[in-house]
Length: 449
Image (cartoon, rainbow, N blue to C red; front, side, top):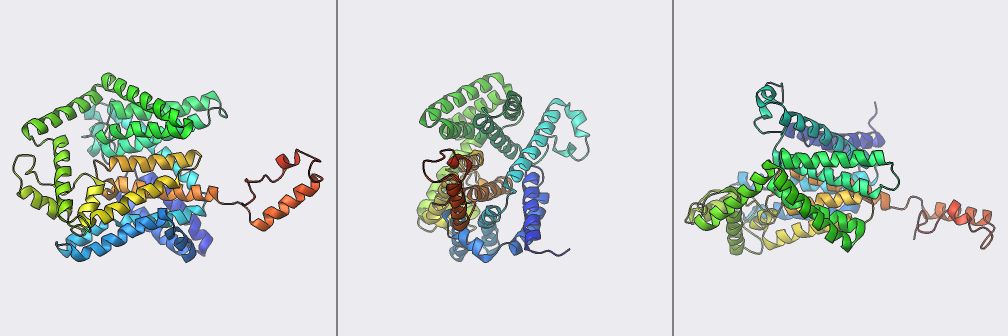
């Protein structure tokens, strides 16, 4: 079989779909599929399409951040191996302009979103089965048995699982809200029922504290996109009410919330080395580290060394705890690349948020992915984590390229003018057939300009 460019393009599309399907399940499978995707997609794209994406903020800023990280290796006061390891966290950003270029010309974007949703639904079903199955019986199940030490988490970790479930739940709610008039009530019940199953799993089976933080913001985004500023108020009130109800109904979620408050009190009152307290202490240390090299940072790969030095000079149980992660994406970049790097990171998030400012369900899902990553990155370094990082890259790249494809003119100026002339002549000119516009070419639809 001859692998010409169209064949490679189609192969790359299916491999991208395979990547998003594997994301919730397996790190090794995802990594292997990403390598195969790169082998297929790079020969399938022309230089002009890549250059076009690099000239935009959405495609160019991720590459600029990687370039800064590569240059930042020059002044890092750590070993060369640490510098290479530090640069590795930025590599995935290079895939964003490639995905934007690929799916600007591909019609497989919706299939990729549907495939990811199906993969998440399968994981949801298995999670509920494992949660309801006795632990001794579940541990004997082949392949998945070793994961059953984590209640209701069949693969990877509960943080990534709850992030995936939250995005899928909000996407299903958004689809139901946008299409409730055109769809039958049975389809709406299915969509809202699935969304309820995702949210119930988060509340009763496995959740991360970041998910509780992100959920109200996604509800506010949904309300604003559908109903304007009134929707912001309604979305915020409904989200707060649902979370409060879930906390009191779910013993699991109640314990998570109350234990977090207990940890914070222990840290603030007794400098106890608790999980929530250490997060705050890492933020304080990171701010102090950035202040010593504010402009360009300490160089790529310097995070672990700088946090070690900060801990060695501190007193107290929590302050002396060692760390290799500041648990904040902005500080993770600022420690290495200073305010300049942090500014590029924030500009990248803003560019991707604006990429999805248009109408439509896909644009709204893209906004969910950006807001979820930005908000969770305030208490984690999710862009540098494998699952969350690649979810953001493929989510923004696939959906962003598809949105740009949908926004592009569908016909050339010449063919549009020709169709306009045919409709105009057949309608007999102005005033002869007012229905002619509805049956032919409408200004602002297929016509450019």
